[in-house]
Every structure is written in structure tokens, then in C-alpha cells.
Amino acid sequence: FMSSLGSQRRISPVTLLLPKHVTSLGLPGSLAHINSVHTKSTCHPKSNIFFLKTHKTASSTILNILYRYGESRNLTFALPLNKHSQLFYPFFFASHFVEGVSSRSVREFHIMCNHMRFTKSEVAKVMPEDTFYFSILRHPVAMMESIFIYYKSIPAFHKTRSLDSFLDSSWRNYNSSVKNNHYAHNILAFDFGFDNNAAADTEDLEERASMAIAAIERDFHLILISEYFDESMILLKHALCWSLEDVVSFKLNSRSEQTRHPLLPNTAEKIKRWNALDWRIYLHFNTTFWHKVDSLVGQEQMKREVSQLRELQAKLANSCLKDGGAVDPSQIKDAGLKPFQYGAAVIQGYNLNPHIDRQTKIKCQRLITPELQYTDRLYTQQFPELAAKCMDPFFSVPISIPGSYNFT
Image: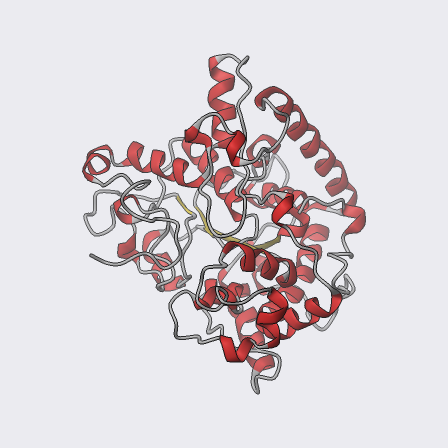
């Protein structure tokens, strides 16, 4: 998902983007929430942050950025109850899903960023009034290919030979009431809390898409685009008044190339029809993303900062990583750094450079710690007594398997 600014209007070979300045879509209503242009003299770093973690959108990498920022500054995370890794997704979020809310053992939360099905009124019960809300979207075509591989075992997919065959007989295979089948249809809309049962021939599709877009603009200050991940991080840096070091990262929870499958143009069109609601949401926010770049950063400044970010990332990779980049899970030496494997995907990870000093090792280790292990560690730090009582999440609760949660 890394890209250069020069390719901003070529999201992928599977679609034509709307022109950058589309007057009918206008600027997002939430633009007023962000100061027009940040300068070091006028802005203060934000630490009250809500991130809606969407599926297969590079959101695990952003989670790591937020974890590192919060941990290094002793901020308090709104973590799931009982050492879970998700906020009882796919249920609609409720405030009591957060550890410390019902018991009133936590006075103030700063960062909330684990998977949930978004409910603004419930999030607002947990997070401070001045919280900055943001999320990230991915092109629905690329996302569907990823979801089909990762969630191959869900009922909608498991008997289907290929993504094409699923799309050709989607209504016959798809039953929206079956557990976990929401992953197969408009998953972005679902994660944002909307009814995801809509396709291209749905009668009120345009009205539903407009309502979803308006609600997202009302509730979120910033929507990022994973195809432009580096540009997104620079935009986030300006919006939060953070430093370049705060938004640098290595890709986490990313698939090996061997499990990626190129799609035919015809398949892409079928995905856009099947996930018609996601497609409309994505088109809108891809356009407003570039308006935000213009208003918050500027094109030339964006190019400079993206270049600086990539230089910093290369420098960190050189000092932190033994192999200089991601490796398949079978090659990861430290079990604590091995990412969770699920579905037909091969999720890569990293090996630490053994020849680094202690302080550098701590910094590097945080950069490459997978989501489940990092969440577990933060929970143990925030709730040491509860952590000792909790079952070991890696052996007793299938914490990352979709729909595995219950309330017992």
C-alpha cells in the first residue's frame, strides 16, 4: 500500500478514480474540526484519540503506532475486557466492553483503537469530549481479495472454489444471518455500524450511501486511505501535531506475496457491484483525502515529508531488522514476535537485529511486536492483578478467530 504522491490518481489498475476536485462531493463537514494549517508554534500534540480499526486496511500498523505513542508517554488505553484482543466484535460496541469502565477502576482513558463495530454514543461514554476520531479505508476490490483469503473458512466462502465463483453465485451462497458472513459483504459499512446488506441493484442504495457518508463525516475528524499509507501518516502527523518519529512504522499483519492473487478487470467490476455501499463510501473519502492534503499540508510539503518518512523508515529497518525486511512466520526466531496465522493467508513478521544496544532493542521491539502480543502486554501493564487471573489468551480463548466472543 506504499505509494508515491505522483501516483495519487491511480489507486490501482482496477478502477478509474474520480478527478481530484469533484465539486459535487465538496469538502467533508468535519473539516472544521481540524485547524486549517498546523505550525509548531500554534498546535499542541493530541493524546485523546479514537481509531476505528477496520479490517484488512493496514489498520494493524496504525494500531502499533498508537500503542507505541501511548506506551512511551504513559497514556491509558481503553482495552477490551478480560484480555480479549477485540472489543467484542462483531457486536455493536457498548461502553462496558472496556476494562475498567464497569468497575470504575480507571479515571480517564486516552486511546481506544481495538476492533469494534462502531457506536458513537457508546464510545463517547468512554472517551473524553475533545477526542480526535479517525479511521482508514481501503479500495474495496483489493480488500475483497484479501478478505477472501484471510476469512476463507467463514460459511459464505468455505465451499467456494474461487472469489469469482463466489461473486457469480453470491446471492445463492450468501446468507446474511449466518455467523461471520458479514465479512463477505460491505465490511467497511459494517465496521462503521451501518447495515451492510446492499448491492448495486438495491433500490435505496444511493440514499443509504449518502446517509453513511454524512454520518462518517459527522463523527470522524479524518479518514485515511491505505493505498496512500505514507501520505496518510503525514496527514495524521499534521492533524495530531505529532513528530515524524511518532508516525514511522513497519508493515504489520501483512501477507506474503505467495498468497496474493491478481484479479481480472471483470472480477473487479463484480466486486464493486457486490460491495456497492463500500465502493461509494470509498470513492467519496478518497476524494476528500486529497482535499485534506491540500488544506492541511500542501502538495510540495507532502512530497518532502513523505520522502523524509521513507528515509527514516529505511534507517530504522537497517538498524532494527536482522533480515532488512519482513520474513515468513517459519523464519521468525522469537515466538513472541510471531504474528497470529489465520485462514489461507501467510502473515509475515520480523527478526530483530541481535547486535543492538538495550535501549535500541526496546524501541525496535515495539516497532515489530504483533498486535495480539502487544495488546496482551499493555493489558498486563494496566491491569496487573486482573491479568494474573485471566486465562492465557494464546491457549485458552481463540481471541482472533472471527465471531468467537461470548459474554460468559
